[in-house]
Image 1 (cartoon, rainbow, N blue to C red):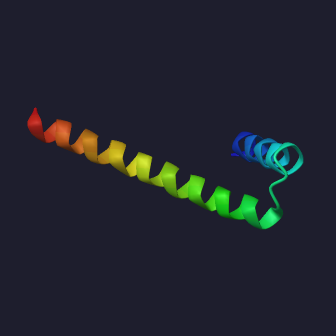
Image 2: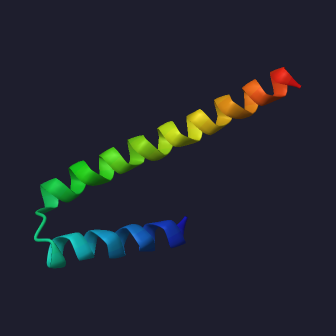
Image 3: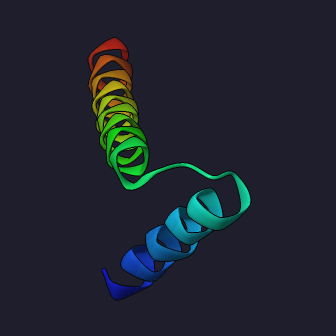
Length: 55
């Protein structure tokens, strides 16, 4: 978990300093990334279930 938090901190720092994204924009982007990751995880779980049913 700490490794993931460090990765996020580095990403947000890059966005802030290199891309001039304000803190509110970083928060929105972070929220959207979390949503995408959750959906990808759910999709993989459903694919695995479907594959198990097909076997």
